[in-house]
Length: 281
Image (cartoon, rainbow, N blue to C red):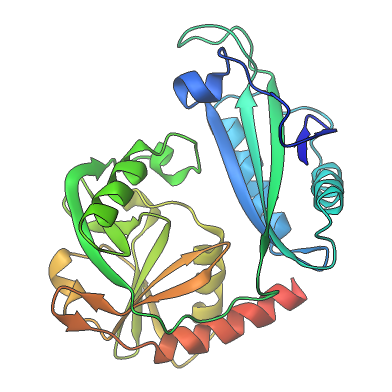
């Protein structure tokens, strides 16, 4: 079942037409939320990111779009898909209503919600091999639009095709200054000794929810030093660990980049703390 503007519809129901602005212009935002036994992980952070992104894109925020209203709509969607007692990923997509060319006819919005089952109620570390490579065909811009979770992800799509064609599990994306920014599907962290680095938002990376949570966790520890600073491609092979973060996987260790093999000791440590925050949050 899919939730379209508060109405539950069957998966086979045609919802969007040819004039949908998300389809025609990428004029849409989305949030992907992990849910376990009816609990939404870091929901307030997702909600406030969505509201801030809508303001940046000059979308009209409906008066009904309160934190509580959208949470209830999410839970209604999860229940309709019989996933209340299980684990699920739910995606909410917000798009400007139909009409117009580049200039829209209205700034009013509609939304859809969809959910899919997950295996584990909490984040788990993967020990499987996970090899990445740099994707250098196209670049991420260093601006605020790159920080937003919009549906305009053609660079990520092309990079994922490149990864599939060349036998990689993922690719690392670079910006116009040739600095490493993020992975196809999440933020990047680099561990060297007791230092943990992640690119700053000014480099063009996604303003990720798990990125934010790990920054909070690391900043409160005495065992690690956090740095939000640019990462050059040359640093990758000097690192002890590399890992990717997003709201569904939590933390995914990278095991190989070119000839370098990486461990996951720090990643495991941080994932345990992230799970503790998810339970309390």
